[in-house]
Image 1: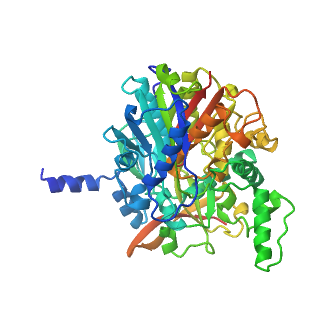
Image 2 (image 1 turned 90 degrees about the vertical axis):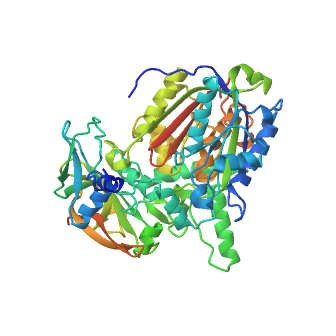
Length: 148
Length: 424
């Protein structure tokens, strides 16, 4: 096998982050599911963290879940400053537990940023995809919107 | 995971310790320069002296001179500043556990019989960058595919853990504030601290500065009232406010580790390393429970078993309070208190210098400062001083200081190291 095609085969590996982000840009949230123990990871992992099994399949998440922990951030890193967030414009990040059982850290939309103490753990959330420019490149990012 | 009880091949002891002043050094002061400060103090601290040419190896914790200063290969660069060439030098990078891990690896190297004397330290020059870019460097220890793109920051990640802890145990923002008040009290007694200022002293200074500017003099009923004032204590990542966060600063730390059988050649009061443990973990979403740091529990278990002691035996501890919630988690994960019960002990003052189990006697990362790569060994420097009863005004009140512990966390608990010390 030519070296170049070996590289592209590695890059195409569906459990690597390149594929995860490509699916996100198609508005699909993908996880890995272990064929041995059924454990699901989002983003996908190439080897199961629960049983170390290496027989995994890529599965699409329904995109429904609940909020298990969160924060409302005022001091943002450059990535978020580029998107217009700062000490006056806060945003929420949190950990979501999906119906499939996997947990993922993502942006949380549809919550009252002025009253962070009122945000409820357990709030049902639905996946939403956010478009943002990072360094002149358009990116599709994972978010969840709280149901009102 | 291998469950066998691990033992050191031979005993290891600390015979000297040094710390630079923690704080904001001018631009142009280098990562390597800071270590010279710590090393010079270490040299003075070795009671019977030592010959630098006898040092077998140099282990240095440093997280990101690469990104902070565009300098790589920092270990030999630092060794050349203190005349230690040509001994082996190694740089350890395990996020904020860098020098804690360097220390543990030095213990293992001496216990193996390969080396007799190892200089271990940490150094970090963070303040060349502005806060937003420092935040970015720190966040580079998070998961790039999920946490970073979610806009998470280090205060944000610990704040996220805090909301889970609050929901499960009823921990309050006031509990977090009490940790900060205690650590600033201790920091006020530590001339090496970045903020050697208690909260009441902060209140006085802020009032004086307002008066000087001709502004109406602010009034706060007490420390808690001051910490509830958003003008004084703004939110960084709710529920973590400014005074819940460790400081971005510059600093270096160093200890001299030797084989137990030669320890008395250097001092009559060596502090022995009797247990060490380390563990790793996934990013937070992949953890079953985010109200505790599992790596802390595993590292502590290994260290306690090796030392043949339990959490109830520990007389004083330096724990990783990068954020106030982190100190609460540590108190529970290290087994000092049951899950959800650390806040009660804090309310009752058990963690103070005159309490049952003094914690972060030097002001912790909160007040002493958190020059990330230097922090782990910085904690060991304090344990060494306290156990030798050389800590001056912040010396713990209790008489029995025979057993101490240090706990150092990398990132959000993806690395944790615990070391246990004995005075004989």
